[in-house]
Image (cartoon, rainbow, N blue to C red; front, side, top):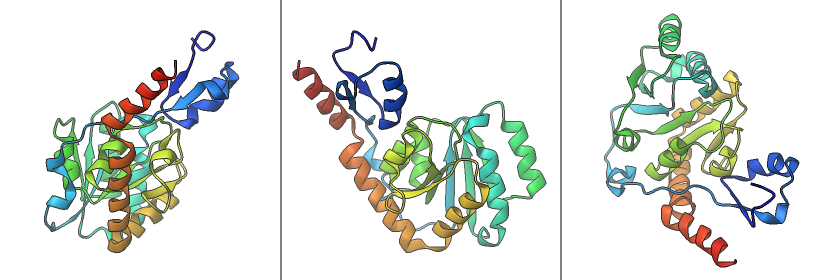
Length: 226
């Protein structure tokens, strides 16, 4: 495919090195980040204040998504979670193990919601979105959370740093670093101003760079060159 392609469209710059090793030329690769259509009625700015601060993780409950690191991090900042609710959205083979971890760490603020078809609604009530993945490419869940106007915490994996600009649209931590993740959670929990600024920046970035229309325009321009 690389040999016969006039141009390669890649989801993120993180693919460039591996494709170069397979023989792809730099000038034949164009990055077009995935865009989505997000329902405007779930934009957070249209909702009023909530009783509790909501932290949400949307991901399949599998080993590489790093839920265990999120739970461990929460146990390290217990004193900051009195008014916090944590929503774990998704299902998978790790659910029973993670539920046992919640019980052993005594984390009553954590709720497992299972698989849901109303993720935009859940994100509309979310203050902090966390994806502690240890191996990923370009998670759609982060793109959805940015469109919802949510402060993001995620890891230095794949194309995630191309979505989440550290210190601007969210916080990037190293995969599997429980202490660093705990510090990021504590920072956003106690700093509403920083949280709100990251939320606004994430929303603006998504509206500018992560829409279906924008993605189509970029792909059309590539085709038109030929």
